[in-house]
Length: 108
Image (cartoon, helix red, strand yellow):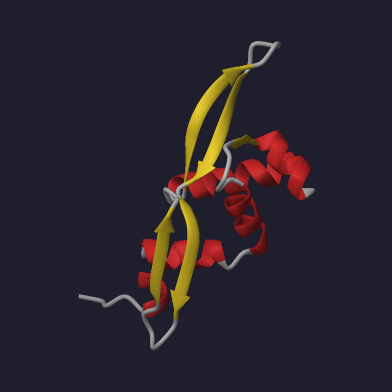
């Protein structure tokens, strides 16, 4: 039976995926812009001066990793459903000491 390399194993490691997400400046700015108050993607894009498509991609990834959740829905005047996202964490600490880093997340 063939053993997976460390790189192959890390692709499926949720902790590693979260660390990679948190080290991305754009993901971090989106995540920590919604710690105090839930916001829709357009508001986040405007505040962070990012394209709306980038914000949607980041929010989708953060939602898959369970770092954000949909706090509420609203219906726009045009009849579209608008999601308001909120961060599940308010602080993250990554400790590197060897091949397996430690990730400490503080709940929001």
